[in-house]
Amino acid sequence: QVQLVESGGGLVQPGGSLRLSCAASGSISRFHVMGWYRQAPGKQRELVARITSGGSTNYADSVRGRFTISRDNAKNTVYLQMNSLKPEETAVYYCNAQRGGISSWGQGTQVTVSS
Image 1 (spheres, rainbow, N blue to C red):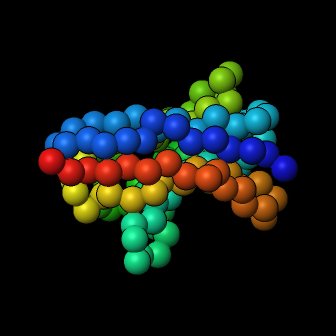
Image 2: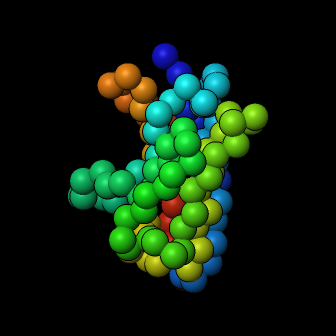
């Protein structure tokens, strides 16, 4: 089973930017979909953005136009560029990979948006 390791989280002021990275232990080209989810305290985990093996992308309405998901198959890494961050987007951000009905998760990275 693939191992996913997120990085790039931290503390950022409202309106700031962060870029999250998700490094996989093997080739990501075999995964049909890779995505980023987030879970705030007391809330359910929600989809932020996802990207297919063909490069098609989907975004949550709340982040469209501010966040960008991308993948670098050569580096086995998926990225999430987050701009104009808001305090309500404080959460643990998780990387996800899906193939053949199997879903794999990383351990998450904390993003805190606060002044």
